[in-house]
Image (cartoon, rainbow, N blue to C red):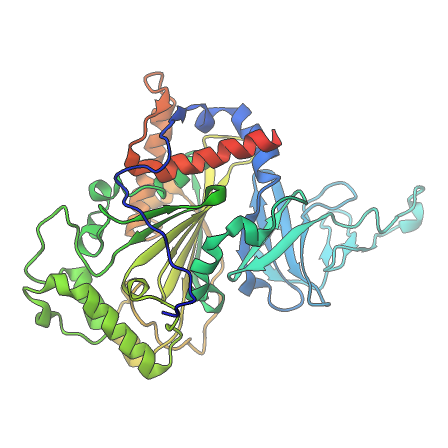
Amino acid sequence: MSASQPQPQPQAPDKSPIPIRNFDKDRYLSRDWMERERQALWAHTWLVAGLACDVQTAGQYFTFEIGAESLIIARGTDGRLRALHNACTHRGTRLVTEPLGVLKKFVCPYHAGAYGLDGGLQGAPGASRFSNGLPKAQLALRAVEVEEALGLVFVRLTPGGITLPDFLGPVLDLLRPYRLETMSVTNDQSVSHTCNWKAILDNFAELYHVPFIHPIHRRMFECATAPIELFEHGHTAVYVPGGVTDSGFPTPEVPTDMLTLQLRAVGLDPEDYRGRVAEIRPALQRAKRAIAQERGLAYADLSDAQLSDVWQFNLFPNIILSVTPESAWLMRSRPDAGDPGKSQFDMITLVQFQGSAEEAQRAKGQDGVAIGTHFRLNGPRPDDYQRPPRDAFTHEDIIAGRKSMTVTIDEDISLLARVQEGMASSGFQSVWLSDEECRVQHFHDALDACLAAHG
């Protein structure tokens, strides 16, 4: 790893570096809270709207919904990226409903008014019958701030305030070596959930629950002592060691099924680690480093720990980004337009296509089915690759087994509806956090500060 690269400043998770204040349950249930968030949070904070790879060429666009707001993010013929309110200035009709696509212009489906990719009004049928005229500057689609960073597109509904680099702070440099901008989308899912958007963020801000509902993690991660980091503006991180087993359980004599997959993926024989399971993590790091040097992979700016571990960053207010050199999960929690007990949860899987086809085949199970995307070289990008469309479904589809967002995420979703139900009980009044949940507290402190600043 280059000496100039930023280093994390982690701390043990067992003692909170900030006061645990706890908070009332109203923020998950109250419509008043929901309205305060709409006015003070969503209107003033930098938000991840989508992926830069979806708007590389002129005419490419995607839509972004946050509560009642809808935006079109589009690349113009002049090469500029713009974020425009998805509302016709004639009578308010939503112009675009598809999640992403390619258009030469935006045409209102109601009265056929046309707007350019820059949001400018091009014309409307019967223009001479508008006695007040059609002032094009006044009737252009309203634009909002938009910037690109780390392969992501950020928007801010209300202009002014902190710049995006200052908002992201050290997180920007810690994420840069993963080169998210060179990854490809292999899955795009969105689930309608029956819980408040913050309950989802809380879930991904602590590992306290992991030993109890995610047994697969015991066989490949050390979550109990994973160091954490708190950043300005509400961002947090957790650095989860991989290539190990949970220290809360006896170290196995032979590699677990998940460790076996990781060893084989980099050409190591699991039998060589019988009685030596504690040596697997550094062995994986050495093997990956050697492969990277042999094949010219861009791992030079990654530390040894990054080669074997999962680094998860929660970007305030609503992004969870779980990264390895080979892949990333971009997860996003969004509020419902009118019900505080509902939300949307998005999950986009990004893959770094690299390595040989043979290496990718080694990382598959005996039935030829690929096992996950983390920790393995995924082979070259297929000639017939196409960006998958968004698959939208409900949390009931996951409970019934009709859809899946990976075993781990499915387990989280199955519990979160019960969290929301329990919060509505008169027997529960306020959250009571442990020091191990200080990332939850840090997020809510930032939320409170944002509401106070813009309320």
